[in-house]
Length: 283
Picture 1 (cartoon, helix red, strand yellow):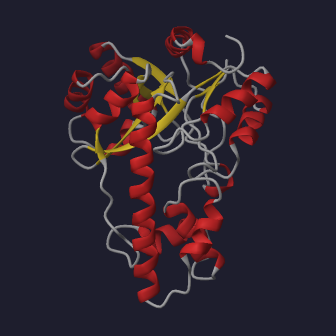
Picture 2 (cartoon, one colour):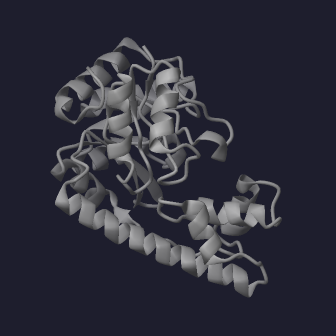
């Protein structure tokens, strides 16, 4: 059974459209799939529609970037992508994100880099503008040998184009997901670099967290064992995801994780069963 519940499309910072991603998921032989674009549900309807047409079992998803003693990512699954409160708050976040992009482009222009907001918007297409699109503009203008290099050189803290980002709290993100009928999952916990994962799991669970992404390409076997133990301790279900972005990011591929356990398969099957009404494809 192949599972991948963490993937991105052109609606945020991936290289495939939601429809193309659904086709890639079908070709990869996924049994369970989810599109989880950053801070937007804009591609969910297209993705689920394509999944239904392909017979791919998919669920609504997205990934919030939140402020929590640093930066933390919260995945949401099984929510109503048209829920009014969710739609309204995501529209506000998209507006704030685009204002930040404009500030970053302006800073780079002041430093002599010849890129334009119009070019960044063209690269973003129908998606919400973000740092990946600025990085692509810098790469295309010849200021870096690739998108990842442009990120590191220009768009990280302390670099010429950096502008601090205001993020929502984990509590608000989890509440938005749950109020829209979904369930919240702690994404790639190893990347958060907290001194006490147990304390973080306890705090997030108290806010309504339902699951943890125990299986992730960058997690070592020891990491996986630790997150499975935390899932047991706090009554969380476990998920698996690749964080696939397509050609926009090296080192990830759809569903290459092979360590999934019987526990994972049971938990993901139960998650999809709880949200049968939101699925694309058949359970």
